Amino acid sequence: MDMPTLSVDGLEAIATRLDRCAEHVATQADRTRSATSDRWRGPAAERHQELVTGHARDLDELARALREAARRVCHLGATARARVTALGEVDLTVGIRR
Image 1 (spheres, rainbow, N blue to C red):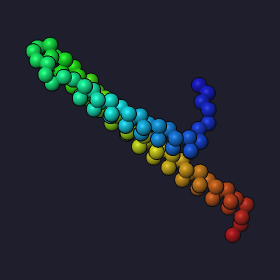
Image 2: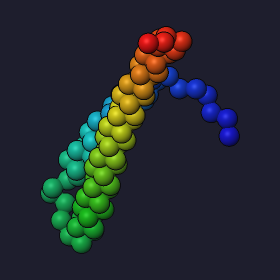
Image 3: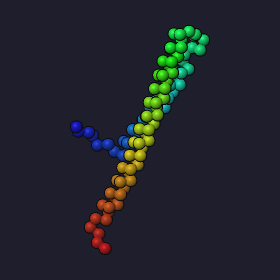
Image 4: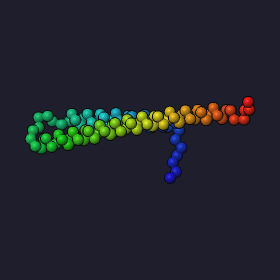
């Protein structure tokens, strides 16, 4: 499978997008929790509330996973940037004898 080359800046952009997605999903989880009527009563209302609570929990978990992915991609970008810098330093010393 051929994949295009991704720059270090590209990794940082992906981490930023993942973090924004996490915020959006967390907002949707909050909206999901607050969009249900608290005046509706009975077995159907209880079942509905259970479903809404479960969906909100799933969205919270997705937001956490997206934040973790963003953190890991950010770490990968920092590691790649450090290694590119180290390679540049090694390249400058090639051919120099002491």
